[in-house]
Image 1 (tube, rainbow, N blue to C red):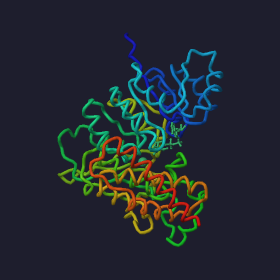
Image 2: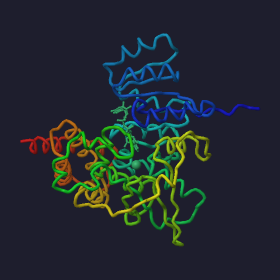
Image 3: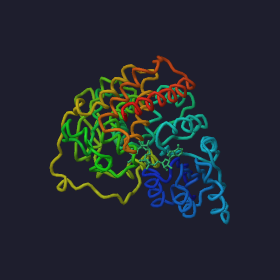
Image 4: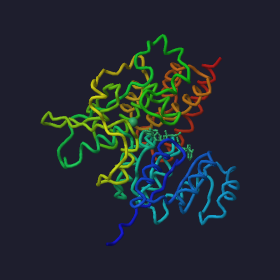
Length: 391
Ligand code: NAD
Ligand code: MG
């Protein structure tokens, strides 16, 4: 029997939460998937360990100061070693790659995703910030180069799975579920005093620091509304957010006949990562099976945009469109990093984002260069507002 060609996968951000879980999926299916490239920002020792185990063709470290150590540590192996943001952006275009998993965090994912699309690679998209910042541009490039963008975010994977076989049946509504995060029941007064240690404890998911803070502030859900708009081509009015603390229903789609389809499973990111890799097939997985008896109560609530203003700000940015979501994202990256350094309080994050959205010039139809300029301008203003709040 002919051996099936293994899908060659490039992982951007292999040392992170999504990256390491993607490597678990690949380890479980060595007959289906192979690592072509591993990339990381800083954590060179983890990257070396991963490279020794998975023997990729290429590794890239974004932080150039770690290059010589990485190169020396892998010199006994036939692995090409590069460093720097440009190398990372170029590597995604390498001919053998089938799928690029964008598992790096933040705005830094935009450029490599664009290059991967232009090189006609299938995008397994975890880096939601790329769609938040430049969804319109990414969609038009994906159309031009006929590249599928397969969602890795659990909610969007759920929606994508609900849409299989629906062909031309229009979506009436997308019902995006949200866990509500660690502060779901915390009062506004108490939110002013929550610490980063509390915010970093997510009830259901073990994720990187940035997305964990975004989940606590519900900015993550705001980003996911934008992500859903671009991935599924729906109007914002067709996207509802419902808080579902058990995180068992990963999201739902309502159709024009009133039917609602949901995708369920134990909360485990390996499921959506694997589906993006194996699509359109499903392959065996060792993830824990869902026990309906264990989760005998599933509950639902309306999100509270008074306590979680970031969700309202994300809706506002989506309605204003153009470069406003890019401003939202840049300001958010600045405030999350300031909050993680104990420079500002939890609720002050929304104040700074709101002020930055009012300050940076709004452009209705931004080009790629406009996004780059908007991102740096918004970061400067947001950093200034952070220093004012600190005084
Ligand atoms: P993480 O912080 O755990 O890992 C981030 C990875 O990206 C690391 O490997 C890091 O080295 C790399 N990286 C960071 N900055 C970089 C830069 N400037 N250049 C190159 N590499 C860089 O983050 P994560 O939780 O794995 O999240 C990754 C992405 O996936 C985010 O966009 C997040 O929103 C999305 N996501 C994560 C989860 C989750 O469960 N963790 C779920 C849904 C979506
Ligand atoms: Mg999600």
